[in-house]
Image (cartoon, rainbow, N blue to C red):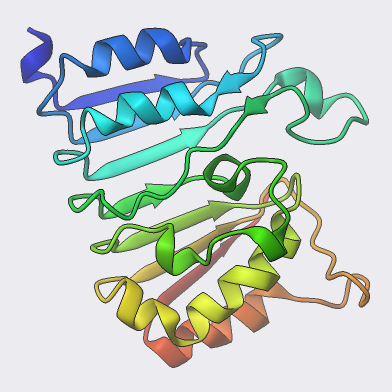
Length: 207
């Protein structure tokens, strides 16, 4: 039965990465995975185990959505992603069938990776990517977007992801502040202009 599964959707349900990894070993035809496991007191998500699971469907996966967090974080003044994720998912460059991706940069790069030490997006994103959504508003997303997303959208995307059609910045839960400039930084103008120059559709999703 599992061998015929093409879509898995976990919406606000806690599914341990170990359980998911074991199941993905049995789903060689899986094309869509939505892993939205925001829950209370679930502990840190071991991204290395999640990555092991994704490796089982590397050739079939076309859509990947990853959202993970702790509802407690929304009510406490704590540093985002502390104790929520462990490690990093790493580069998805070899996922040749992946065309639709929604993922926090903290999950892709790991929470402890400074922007200056991180690989450029051209080495992290799948070659045949068509639609990219980056949820923003926690951890170090602003620094990463300014350090890596701007150069990517300024032209590197054309060679690294030649099929890219749309970039969505989902800052529905964020307050954008550019370091050193206060609240005057407007990603809708800045990133939107870069996308326009590259012929990409741009959407800034707000709350």
